[in-house]
Length: 265
Image 1 (cartoon, rainbow, N blue to C red):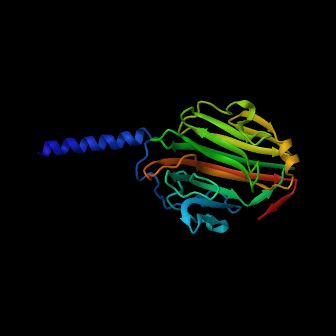
Image 2: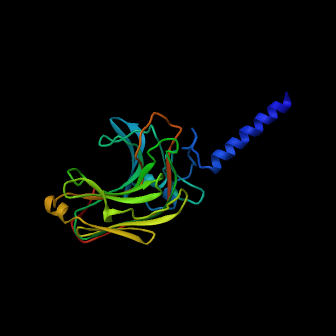
Image 3: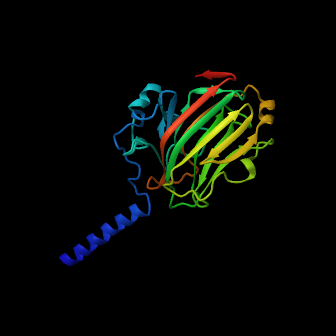
């Protein structure tokens, strides 16, 4: 009767509250706030790669359009932070099996001079119903070759760590400094990071914790390689569901370039 209906209504309400308080994602976890991150952040020098298909690749939003652009995969939260949401079944680029909602800076640079990416952000959810709970939130990437994935700042929720992944001389991926750059990084925790290349020397920082790596061999092997910064949400998993995924939020993103051979594309 009506008492049974009321009891079911109460149970449903409790489950909804539980999902919110536990940070669980639902089929509506990617939803547009109808507010553009470009109103707060200067994104003119970037393009956005989305987890949606456009032709044979993924959809991209470029340059000035980012100032007013928003959708369910890229939008501003209530405090204006740029929120990047990626479902597990999102589209991926030709060079990857994993989906992303991620910014790519237009400014390319060779190893030489000083180049840095700084950000303030928090990770809100990482594929909670699947075992591989990892996403990449910052990168230094190239155009191809052994050292194309030069630097990746990767979050692992299972271990609650941030790792700076680099390539050794043979092209094998390892942790810079042989250890995580930060531990006990929980969901919702706000942190700041910096990826800085000085010549061929990498310094990576997260909330004052630092690891370094010398990339002299990459410079010697291919001095013509051009690199660029990426920031956002590059989910390291792919499953056939849109009811789960990863969500991160950036309140600050900035880059700096000086010296070296620089070119804006």
